Image (tube, rainbow, N blue to C red; front, side, top):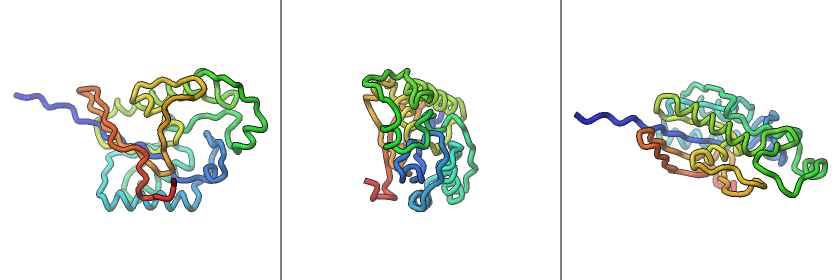
Length: 214
């Protein structure tokens, strides 16, 4: 008799819709910003796309920050899902940069010519290595659950480090190395087969429902 192979995990990583902080070019971090009207329109467009494509999720897990929470609520309402909020999926803690515009950060802080992955961001925030470790914990906690179809609503910085964790790419000095684009309401689709420890990346930065982002 053949043994049944463990079922795979289907994981969709979704960045929130455009927020006020995005529109104002702010270092959002864990500061609270609501979605803009455009961000809500992006999210409704994605929800309608997924309804039309008959996309199904078993679980929806979201960052509790307002911009992710609003995004998750719109999706959950359209697809009849229950939201679980998980702080591991919060955006990077940007320390004293949090909530400031890019111009304010450039003007008010000294920026060293060389940084390591272990250095904090914003004087006392999460450096790349610390964020990478948190992303790894978020991923590990997810994979301790039952294999199913999961939708994760999170943030660009954290989702980048999740992708690095999947690929086994450690953070580099000066924040160099591979970056993954996540436009607002863009998503990546991953499949994890636990019996093989094999990842498949089906989609990256998919935002066909909102084409004018580029």
